[in-house]
Image 1 (cartoon, rainbow, N blue to C red):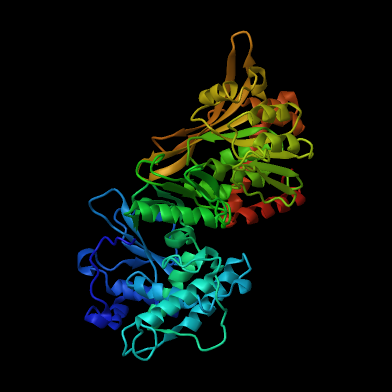
Image 2: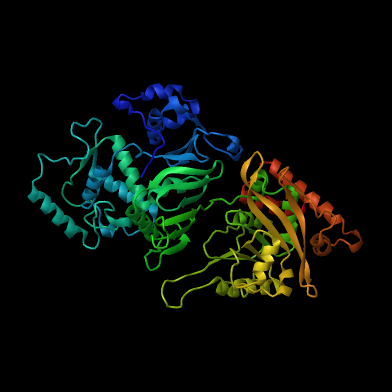
Length: 615
């Protein structure tokens, strides 16, 4: 359901603000954007805005994190595939509105869609739709819609009625219903989900005889086409949110609005909401079926990946979720954020990045630790560009989120079944198998159980390991590692060399941001005093939003591990800090050359290595 935060003005054809009038006052960039055929509905949306209250929104072809400082944003930006987003200010709430501008936003389509779906039964054939490719399904659906809709500029007849002479008597209606039942066979038509789910209904594909049609305007046809493709092939009302690369998380906490976490504008409330339990449950069930993990009252929790790689967690039913079924989606990033982009965002600085470069090149074991949504996986992805380019990497995850630029990358994912067949494959199983694959680096999505003990055994035998971990400090990390259920022996913990502690924090004057709070070195374990020795090498100063190199001239790993490997004599170990500065300057120069893309940075580092600039 759409719940707009304003009362829309009448449509241009119903006495509202004219398209020509509005178009004339738009910026040249916005005129060019809304002038494209697939974007005409965006101009109609602007025509119906109460501009006297909030003014006309500004248009941004691209948005950037520098726009975080805008207090009450009122702007429109493209989301792709003919969609746009309006960030609409709310003076009475800390959250502003996120409004997807879809072709069907102002179209009243329910009865029309119901009739279109009935007509589709006669033109969709089961044998013809045997593909799992979404693009193929989309093409077949659009072709079928063109067979069922007669697009007319000026309709004398009210839209939504079939082009038939006269009316239909009850006998004709009953015969039609019987025909639909026969043609469906294994499918079903409930008037809403129609030719069920994956377009595998029944009927005849473009069958013999002239099919009945429904008369529609071009605007109505575009809206019908969009809605049908969105709901039947895509993820329904969530499709525009999944399409927007600026969204990081989508959350539905039960009945009410859906909220999003935006890269630029932080927490926003969408105009999409669920007001009825049945509506919400139906949507959640359909969503779980589309991802191949049907949810039931017996198995009410699903944790899996969407077709685009985004991670979704669903909890079904009011008995376990009192406000109704809920779900959370963590968006998949097409191209990972690079370490230089993290420098731009203020998450880390050049010297810290250079430090991690030296650590990973030397095969040090590293954990990225922090609370939920602190950016742990993003950081671990980013630093993989520092791993030697000829490395064989094995990654192990519950849900695939890690992205590695190396060609020799084995990606392994756990398997969970819903029966007692014993065919589950756990992280513990995959980690044991990885040790036999001779990897140069083992990456673990997250250590949370008995696989932690195997990971430390791998470190003990010389296999470099990287992982994320849920702990807000080094002390908490060690407590969790050595306690149940992980139970790593205390004298094994010093096999872990580097711990990055990361968090989402309120940055003074900048709002919410992610920062590396500290980079720490694990020095050793004092068995006599049963104490762990560790030191922070870098530390974030919240007052100035800068990083302090607290370990300068005092780094155990740089002086006792890295310097000897680089051939620096013991009497001159302080030279290692000059090498750290040199690498920091190299990263700065690469950044100044506007090379920030994840894969471009990896290629550049390879070229520098081949040229002998780094080793």
